[in-house]
Amino acid sequence: MNKPTILFAVQSYELKQSIQTVLHHQAVELVEAKTCQEALKYFQTSNPQLLILESPCQDGVDTLAIVKSFHERDRRFPVILVTMQGSERLAISALRIGIKDYFEYPFSDRDLIDSITKLLSPRASTVSSAQALNSALHHPFVGSSHSMQKVKTYLQKVAHVDSHVLVTGETGTGKELVAKFIHTYSQRSHKPFIAINCAALPDSLLESELFGYEKGAFTGAQTAYAGKLKMADGGTVFFDEIGDMSPYAQAKILRVLESKEVYPLGAKQSVALNIRIIAATNRHLEKMMLAKEFRDDLYFRLNVARVHLPPLRERKEDIPELLNFYLKQFNQQFGLNLLGLSVEALEALFDYHWPGNIRELKNVLETVFIDSPRERISRDDLPELIRGNKMSETFSGRDDREREYLLAALSAANWNKSKAAEQLQCSRMTLYRKMEKHRISTKKAY
Image 1 (tube, rainbow, N blue to C red):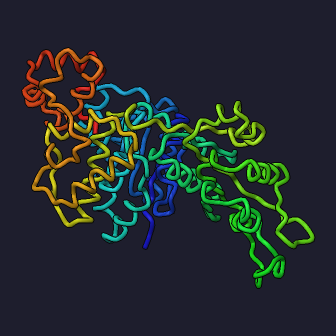
Image 2: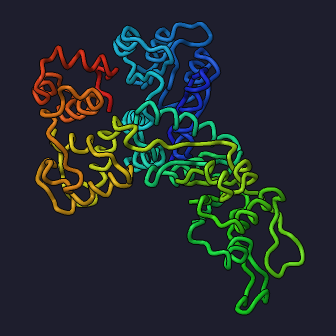
Image 3: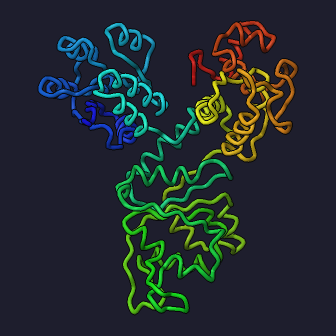
């Protein structure tokens, strides 16, 4: 099966890095053109299936004129326009000349993936190639909030360097997903990813499990064992819940980081290691250092690239996107076709504080699916703990929750302003004023 070729002419560092990260997998061949004119020359001599083009062209050429040149040779050739300087005028002009899609940075990786898959599918030789592309371009992070866009942008930078990483965040925010993402898009992706749960590793087994042992090193050692660290040689080791690691274990791991070697039990010489460490914790390591519960020298070794995952209660605008993602997943898993949630159900989900974060949201939705509700999930279908007050009774006079109620109503009404205003029992003008006040875009955000 031939891989589809995607040609891209993008100069802005953030845009280029974002696109390269999304298209990192081997299901597509990514060809970079340094200028728009170079992209046109490649198109004339080769057969790419898609062009991703930045506006404005860095070589001073008119972007839309370049697109017209492409279409003179193949009027059906799909072009995606990306820009750091978006405007309504540019978007309209682009669509008028036949550009298939348009993205302003920052944009959702998932939206770009969906657009690429859709545009390539009709031109792919088989259905299976389109399916393979969709699978290969899957991005594990759902959410277009400002905080998540910052995390995604930083992760792309972290993945392309080889520094140790410390991932912090509450339980259920997706720390292991971050670790796997960094490994997958790093230069170590072809080597193993080994996860170690520090909380479940007793000191008595630390050296044998991590460092390995020689045959006959102790009673029961009938064969040699390389150890998890050596098994990950060339790849990535993920220390989950490193804040629960004992002082003894911390000292041992610190020595490994400093010497880049281990001594298997019973061995006469050390074994060299080439590993990248990604550590994660839901604990406050800085406070633990002050209390002498965590070694400061180990902390400074790990805290080179720092990734903090915000809790769900601080990015509730991502809830509709997360719900859509899990609705599709559970519809397929349970063989159902639920259409979505009622306004009251969305209100309850926005009103809840989510101590278990995304993992809890997913579990709540799965619990609802087990009961097999009818077409749409209502407030009564939710667990009693999640149910909140009715939106229309609490919207007025609650400035601290206005944004959440607005997002819930707009999402439930599929961004129909009249319907959303009716649900909130306010006028359309009031709705628009409040949307402007809370900087909620008038275009569909999810």
